[in-house]
Image 1 (tube, rainbow, N blue to C red):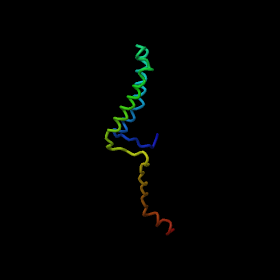
Image 2: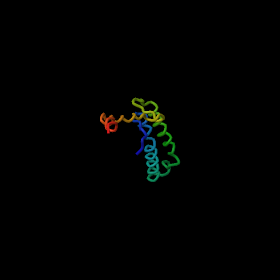
Image 3: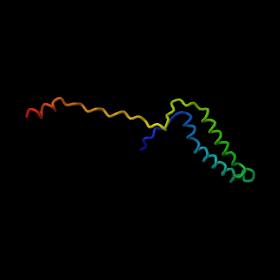
Image 4: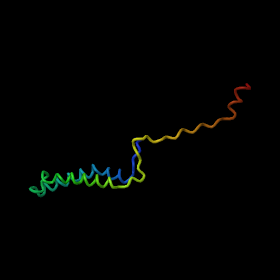
Length: 96
């Protein structure tokens, strides 16, 4: 498991959709090229990928950053609790 804290703000969530959106767009473009060919070939429709990338970047730039977690600073770990002191430990070794 990773100790990396992931951010759940809207901006980071939308930006995380970049990869799946591009893969889906490429798949749809290749599917259109197989069914129709000609004008809908991948060579003519590849600018759609740039439009999808621009739309996602635009959406992530206007999305709010409420509850954003900055990944550049490591999360703070609270110090471990101090063990309890045994009051009988000090008197056992001295009297015997």
